[in-house]
Length: 347
Image (cartoon, one colour):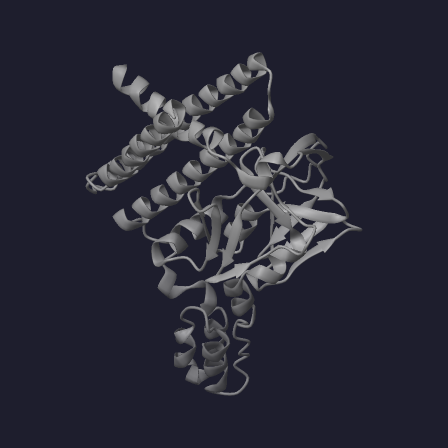
């Protein structure tokens, strides 16, 4: 029990750090109340649904989307550096790519039932943005917004910065986008060998399937087996699914923990903006209580993710020793954050 309390106290210190530090001009900018927009999302040909706590909204004639969700759907990695207040979008590492593919495969699908329109509060936030190694700045007069811990940017800015077409159809309220990998795969069509000419049917099947194996078509010298080559894109090399390895489990866990850490930090920074702008002591205490509640939530989610990872590794017969590195990093950040908060509080 004492250990859990210590972790919660340390987490609170880290989260309250954002409330104690000056937040420059963004802290003084006024938050705005907006109505969400009911939208349809289609990424890589799949109709997805936003998580319950994320939205699309229109402000000053521009449509805003959650940056991390869209980047991940396009199979890009996102990182947040709280110290430099920098959001970095980059090509994923091999491990991150495994996690992103699994995330997209398991992402909630559009049920066809429109999400209810809500009134939300969007707080302007100060953030530098780097896309694939190059800094990107919003056009004059536009802002990055924080809503419940998620970062929102205009659709057009995201499309131009990510280097892919993200299309907003205002008439149908649909956002459509395709990742590089998906567009590349669309250029590959399955073999169409008919086998009418001896030997050519199989070869056509092999050429048509650039994705996996269709090599069965090479045996199509009799013509009829050429049809097998045409369907080769669904068979062979993939073995019906990806193999779960210790590396893939650890990569997935790291991605989930990074998302949790970023979400917790950004949520408390939103509370920090409110705390700095609030003069009433009672209301400040209420904001502090909200931070405590967020701490409890983040602590519980951290433990849940660690338990899930341990269960997966154990079930697969893998070592769980690698998880200690995650705990060590977690505790290091907490202790560092607590020390900084104490310094500012005493100062």
